[in-house]
Picture 1 (cartoon, one colour):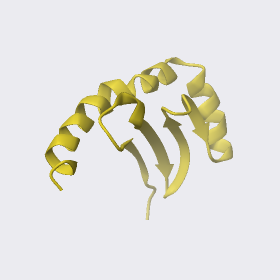
Picture 2: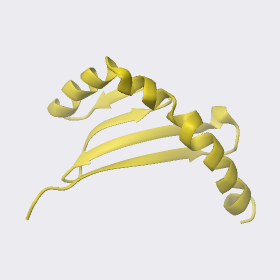
Picture 3: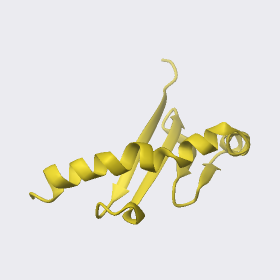
Picture 4: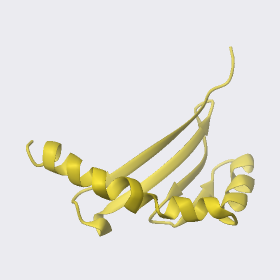
Amino acid sequence: DGFLHFSTVTCLFNSTKADDIAYIESYYFNKLKLISFDSRVGKFVGYTEFGVSNAKRLNEGPEVTRARTGKERYCVNNVGNDYNHAVAKS
């Protein structure tokens, strides 16, 4: 009984080049994806009525600016480490 809210941050990549990296932030409620930000799209996208209204709000506020820096802030350095220590050795 209860409710489940969670978010994920994903870095998709097939090389260490910044152009080959995508940053994706997703927000869920009870296993239903409500909103996500994809650096390839550059804005939040809603998947439910509630998500669409909140994506509009997030895209008009400072949250979208913070999300747009996520690729550089979170992915680029970590992907380099992951690529060198895991992918390149497999």
